[in-house]
Image: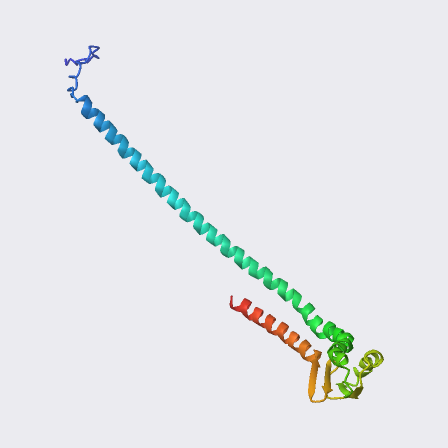
Length: 201
């Protein structure tokens, strides 16, 4: 018969491991090492904080630049929209309102030009050349109050806003039609340039 050996658990304590060797450190050297490690960690933390602050500053500057660029673009878009909305109004003012105002004020402007001549009270006749359409209004305003020797002559080559005053050897020209035309051209040029600028950025 074969006998099996039975193995039983042993409850005896394991022998204690030998104690680790004791390292003797000089307290002064230990304090120096501790301070050096603290300084190294402090410097690394400071460098990390500076790097993080610089990265944040760079990001903020980039964001600010982007926002300013978007704001500038939005401003130019809004400005262009407003100008394009005003264009029909300004064109109508130049085409309709200014000519009507010129017709109403033409006689008064002629009177203002004649005022210095009235003060010198000359006997030489002053010829007023105007469009046959404007001449009746000018005659009505000037014929009553000027006290000057005036000769009114209709000239079909002149526009409703044009008048020539001829006195001896001098001539004065009042050209409200030309002024209105220049204003209309300036409006057209301005808006053409604005459209080209908007198209090309």
